Amino acid sequence: MTLRIDPVVPGTRPELAAQEAQILAERGRISPLYQILLNSPPIAHGWEQMLSAVRNRSSLSADLRELVILRVAILNRAPYEFEAHLPIAKAAGVSDAAIQAVQELKPQDVFVWNAKQQLAIRMTDAMTQQLEVPDDLYNEVRQHFDAQGQIDLVATIAAYNMVSRFLIALKIGH
Image 1 (spheres, rainbow, N blue to C red):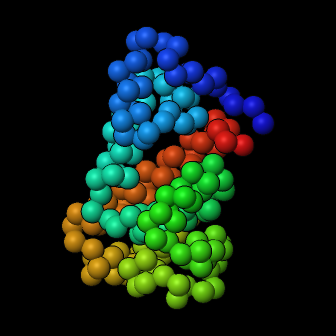
Image 2: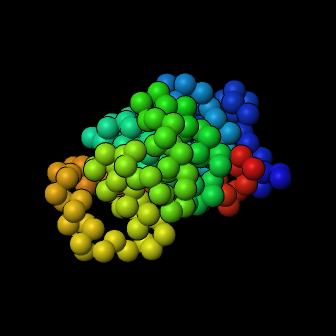
């Protein structure tokens, strides 16, 4: 499939040099996603700030964050997102068994995740599939996450739902 918007080739628009340098500093490269985002410099800037905060400055442990991101990608059928985060998840110590379980629409072997991970996956499923989070589920979240952790968990799930929807709508990585 063809991208719906042409990417901005890094280094071809001098007015974007500072922004490209910031993306490189945070991400190490200017991915196809960011090459598309650079068509709207204000959106690219806000996106980079928000997603860098979610990925690099959140109180969630890296393994928990990456399990949530992988789960969102699976539920939303966003293979580019899943493949982009798979090596990050493995580097964060997520086991192959946990990755396999997160790929199942109705995970059978949830015991590969600890209690906090199981809860985060349930929260991800609720926010991604039903949009509304039942009070009893949120009360469980409150028992395992402090206020910042609650915000960081919800923001991670919401942000990566945005990412996957953006990728799919613009056919990035298909």
